[in-house]
Image 1 (cartoon, rainbow, N blue to C red):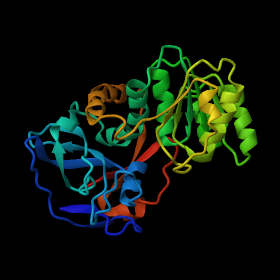
Image 2: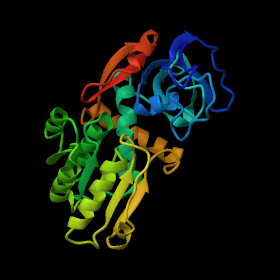
Image 3: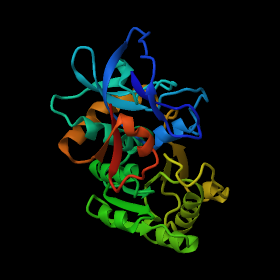
Image 4: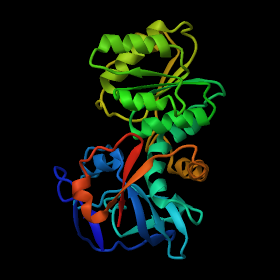
Amino acid sequence: MNAAVVTSFDEPPHYREFEVPTPTGHHEVLAEVLAVGLHPRVKSGASGSHYTSSGTLPAIPGVDGVGRLPDGRLAYFVADDDVIGTMAERAVVDVRRSVVLPDGVDVARVAASMNPAMSSWVALRRRVQLKPGASVLVLGATGSAGTAAVQIARRLGAGRVVGAGRDRQRLDALLELGADEVVRITDDRAETAAALAEVASDVDVALDYLWSTPASDAIVAMLTARQDRSRALDWVQIGSMAGPTIELPSAAFRSTNFRLLGAGQGSVSLHDYVAELPSLVDELQSGAIGVAPRIVPLADVESAWSRVDAPNERTVIVP
């Protein structure tokens, strides 16, 4: 079969022939792959930098996809943490990690949307209890996942949503997608922190896609300005686009009701992820949330690898 093949962590995948994988488990089948999202998680895995990376090469990237099962049904599926991913003409699917899709579904839209939407959907349904009317900050709201998080927070009952990010055009667009207020992150750290303290100091939940300095600046500024320090702030760490580490003063934990937790592979069980798939598919089908696909043939994966997606867009590789 043809596949995107990673032969070096310092290069993008190459379009090459690869041996067709063989199902081995009782619940595994070989599916025809129809569409695979080129997510940041896919890129970090292909570079060997993701925390689940085994360091084994050659590898096929891809953490999920839409495919046709042997019985003809369409399904969205989540791949195992393995060196043989989904960005190929065929992929092994564990049916326990899949959800059957309705006929006529836009497979490219599902492939584009499920991964970025899943991060905040699972965070708000499995890691924290989002109470009706609660307020939410999305830090890193101008990426595809962050934009979906704004929509999902509103969809799940948030009474107020604040989006923070660098791109002014994307921030303005968030006001049409469910954000009540937006804050632009700039190189002036003090100015950005002050702006976040002004509009987001009393939020109940923060969904953090940035981490590193932007997160530490925001946490300190928001907690310092918080009117009721006994009111819980759940800070959910989802992504690390700004860097993998953070420095926080211990007083942030002692002087306020501040709770730091993560949402990702390991902190949320695979069972819980899969349990959320049907309801999220329904949301995508309704058109209430979602990311627009930019379809690229598998043969062009190498040139597509470094392209930056437009606002609310996700590259989708189609064999």
